[in-house]
Image (cartoon, rainbow, N blue to C red; front, side, top):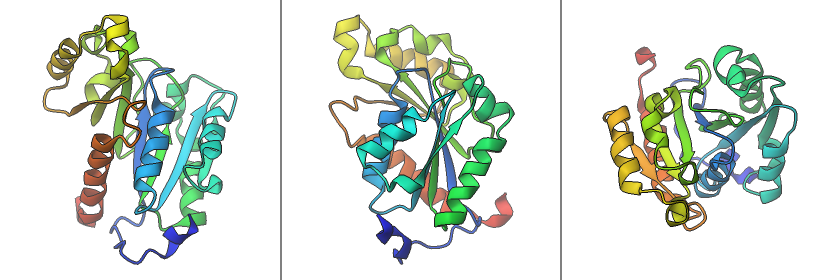
Length: 223
């Protein structure tokens, strides 16, 4: 893992810091599995750090460390002690401290992923914490979930509908979910995934790679 420090092909991003990617969504939607998959796919070519959020435990961070997807020291846990969305939207100080700690220890980094604790459809990241946001739903919640909307579904930069392999078992119509998601999101992208069947999450990783390129090429004067 430490070989990433000396990877000479990374150009300075012009911002003086990594792209910060927020990953949110309800409990059980597959956020941690998605973060693990992104670490596996992007890790060999991207200098990474991860911050996880849980209310009273470090369970998600422990899972990622045990899975060996990243050097364990590059994964920090924030115990929010409060409603999960508070720590990513309202009082982001603990998460910012964790992000900045990773950048101080291992920087320069290309990407820091901040995973929210499980929350409902209203959860969004403060733009002071996350430059890009992914919101994860899972099919087992039923095909009605996208049309319920909520800030997480409607405003995230990318909506991921996970566990498509469960659709036949729960009677969910993926076509209906795609139609309803498009109706509430406009031209914002939606990707359907099954991390169980496709552990490399190629489409999501490709989207993240595009965001990384855009971040590294964006002029400082653009903000």
